[in-house]
Amino acid sequence: MSSEERRTFGAHLSARLERLPSARPVWLIICALALGGWFELYDVFLTAYVGPGMVREGIFSHQSHSFFDLTSLGAFVAAMFLGVFVGTLLIANLADRIGRRKVFVIALLVYAIASGIMAFQHDPYAIVFWRVISGIGVGAELVTIDAYVSEFIPARLRGRSYAFVQAIQYTSIPTIAFLSWQLVPLAPMGLTGWRWVVLFGCVGAVVVWLIRMGLPESPRWLVQKERYKEAEDVVRRLEAKVMKSTGEPLPEVLASDIIPVEVAKPGVKNEMWRAPYRRRTIMLLVFNFFQSIGYYGFASWIPTLLAMKGVNFTHSLLYSFVIAFASPLGPLIAMMFADKIERKWLVSGSALAIAIVGTVFSWQSQAAMLVVLGLLLSLASTCMTFSYRTYQAELFPTRFRAKAIGMVYSVSRISGMLSGFTISWILHEAGVNGVFLLISFAMAIVVFTIGIFGPRTLNRRLEEISP
Image (cartoon, rainbow, N blue to C red):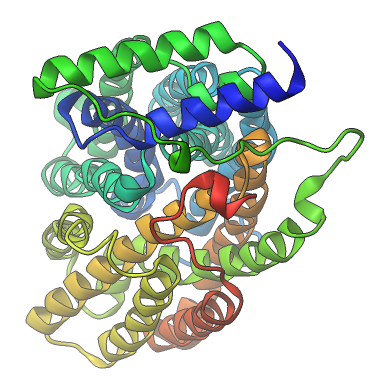
């Protein structure tokens, strides 16, 4: 096949994917991906809900005696971010080499095994170590899912599909909040409650891993690797399932719908640091560093922040459970406007809301107001998260999409890791007000960065965004 024939094939295949309707087979693929991500998010938010139980058992302490105190709860928070950093920066790069499907299948298994081992550890250093390993699986998983969804879903459905993925994934938060509320204060069968919460995630992840084995590879990635027959087979099977589901033939591919597929220039390396991608890379590096401080500064510390506001141990877990219900609700509500409002404004607006509501939260002491404001914070946070995950996956071409997402996303893991120690220290020195002052500053940087420098992507095909 000549160079021109390869370009024509890729462009035609892309147009075939873009014409697919919002049919059941398309959403089943998205759902299968989201189910795997459910356990990845379960692990990410584990800290906020099992942390008080670990402190109660005497494994970790709330506050740090030094900035890098590995016996503080901040070290447990930081361990997950360190693992996710390695997973996003190094392991996720494999998704551009060996395929999306292989990486997210392996990553889910790594998470399940490492978390299972961690559940039976008693030494804080051993727990931190296995937390890092499980985080590596989480990081590789999240980046690969984002690349996969963007390449499979038509542009007109992309925002809704990411919102749907996150809505499913974020049902893990009220689940873990409920399990923690019920189990963390207890020790069923002589095993402390937080360990049962960890083990629940491991068992479920193995079940979903078996489901994931039946997913196809990304056809756009297959085209980049010149595996044309496999790409054709994937798309043809999907088209057949869609027609069977809808009972109608698919529309013809028009010449105006065919946009040339992006190709790498011979001998050019590190394209993300060359025009036009260099500006996008720098923008997303700055954005990810600060969004993680603002987002996880609240999400990973909900029960602890409530406890610092005077709420007792059991009630802080109950209130956290109530607040967690907003996590899947936010993306479900956002599905109504996810493909109607420009992506960059969704991200910036959500960050601004986090700063404002978080500041008001820090002034409150009444339980009812803390819960209401916590719900609003959760809604704004989840809206920002699905929007920026959609956005950064759109800004890079298929040939290095996973690598680029991994690079920019890894920076958020560094700041998330540092925020674990930083917030633990700020809580000791300046209390809850100091924590939200830090969060507001981080969100202000997010609004400025995306609002000023972010390109528009709404309803634009990947080949248009990366010509």
